Length: 309
Image 1: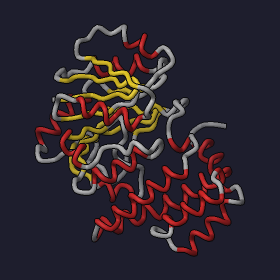
Image 2 (image 1 turned 45 degrees about the vertical axis):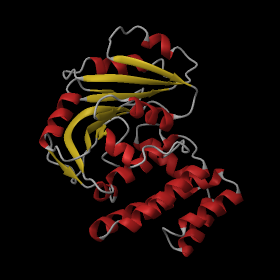
Image 3 (image 1 turned 30 degrees about the vertical axis):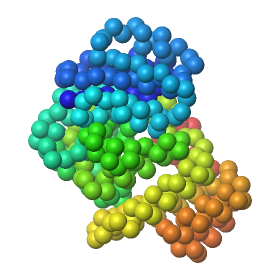
Image 4 (image 1 turned 60 degrees about the vertical axis):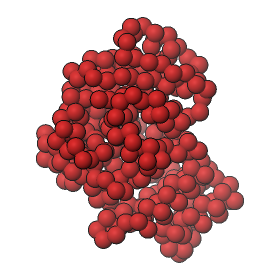
């Protein structure tokens, strides 16, 4: 039923635990495709310790996570594709619960489970009022969730029917950052998410991998903004209002955070996309604010909130 796709680039310290969490699943009808995206460390040696016939390794030059995931999907022999990052892991019943959800909601194409964010000093279970009751499975509106919370989907807790993934375009291979969030917008445009509210996926926040922890190119941010413009024009009613709350907040936050590292020309190009989402006056105010270093204050406050110093 499932093809599990893991994009792998230099994760020799994590990949053993990640793969172990897959091969130890209580549900066994799956293949595991590890897309070795040009790793230069000992990741391949770790993988070769496994003798499980369900594991297949495909090696390519380093093209980025988006291209690696797309390649894995294209090679999938099963109708449902399951994504997992090389430094995250699953509870043993993850695939079993996903199979149950698919049986219960056979007409749907996007599925996700609850997750636990694992920090160095603590673990935080993803939860809020827009999710089904704890321990239950039901439909979730991606845009309603985005209006107030982090997405219900991430790249280690989602199952997508292969044909729907391909139909919606997969991951944008030109992007190195926010390519996952950009993809979720397109996946959720015509389909609600079937959400299993059990914390069966573990998101490793001790690894330096999220866009909030790295620099983001202006071209990636602009591409993400332009996708938002396209999506907002296709939404209506409550969904459009939910999405507006998200993108107006995100555009402002991301500009303050990332703009100081861009050239003036890059900022001007980015602002051309921003004015399609927020007002011209707001863009002018943001441009002045980003010069004050307010993003640095934000990062320090967030670090303290997450247990740092």
